[in-house]
Image (cartoon, rainbow, N blue to C red; front, top):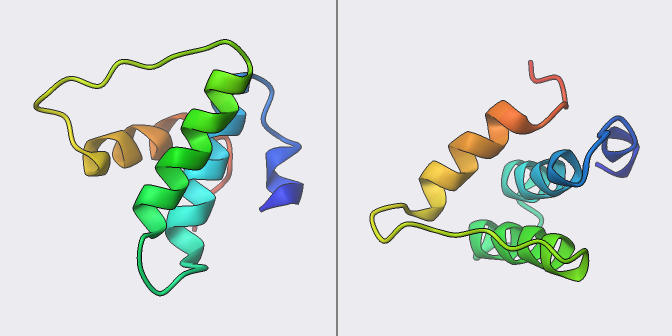
Length: 75
């Protein structure tokens, strides 16, 4: 995942790579989506960015968006 992050050009790309990487690699038995989401938030907020989540938007839809944003090639 770290090598792939080097291909990410923007902060949003890097955050999307982290989110997508944690969710798809399943490093934990439980909580991979929550962990990935919080890692993404940490990266963005540490760099002065904030995201707004609509009330009707869940972590699954954010994950789907991250798949489109992430510069990592998928099989």
